[in-house]
Length: 124
Image (cartoon, rainbow, N blue to C red):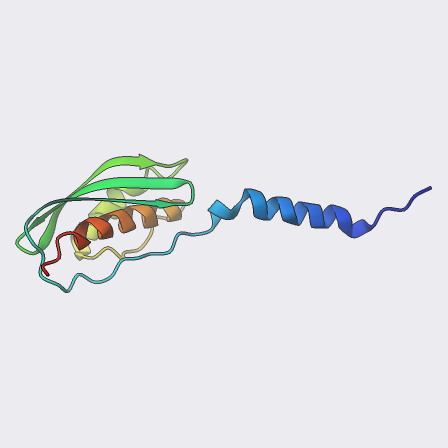
């Protein structure tokens, strides 16, 4: 009768967990207050974080974010974040806003895509 090491199964489960689920980590926010002069125009930005990706088009008018259009948003269950996050960004005129509960990663990916678009509007 052979005796197996009781820790082998546990170690294998831990290894599988870290191989299969690295994309489940929360995406870091890159947003900052918009305290620079912005050039009027329409700018595009995209961001990928974990299993989510967003591609946005942002309109800048009179040094303000005037419109955010989400062109594409790849997500499993974060669609509800699209309108809410866009509205919060427009209302606060910043990309670092509160996330939508249940759609944290999608919220952050959208914020980061908008931030990338806005960075293209910075005057040098």
